[in-house]
Image 1: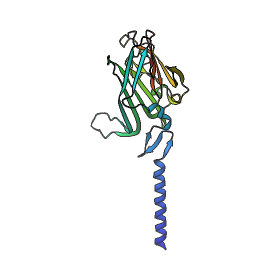
Image 2: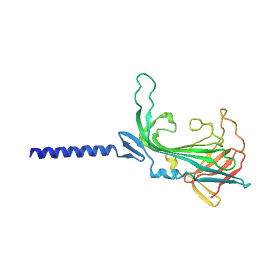
Image 3: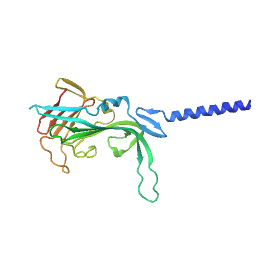
Image 4: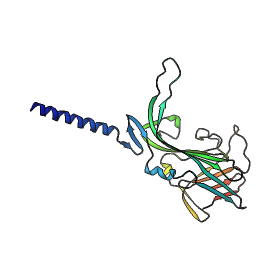
Length: 243
């Protein structure tokens, strides 16, 4: 009888420990899971519209004079449950880097493939701890996951807002937080309707960056499912995406 009670007690403890372990590795909110006792900021279904680009996809644009520019998705780098570790300062007390969290990230690189073959851009989509404000130096809430988007376009006029400008001279300032889910602008281009468009309007690269010619783009219109769909140069020339 005593042996039976001990067995029942042992099984009960195992069930409680298993339930506790499952709880630790369960979802803690949208885009956040605790894995190995650290946060894992992962992509959600709501993020997927931003992540539809595939290697080999082409974006072709035409201006009013019939000239065309063609860009191709030349590389996609997928990081799933990548590790973010604390950097240890050099010194005699050096130890292994501490694991801070896991995260998902997708980097998309485009290359111009027409006769010019110069130019292109990069877009980076990832999950991380939610910023407490719009300024990164104000800190993060590690108990909440947020979706982020950053990018550059090599022939973009740029912006002097260096804090939010990821690539300094040619960075694209995407919305943050819930703004990445809309509302968006709508554009009708060459018979196709784009309903989820974000506009990037450059001002100036500032004194630290090289001057830009009139052919550089001052306006870029990015549809979250299709990518860039319209470009307007500093000289006012419009380049529309071909269907």
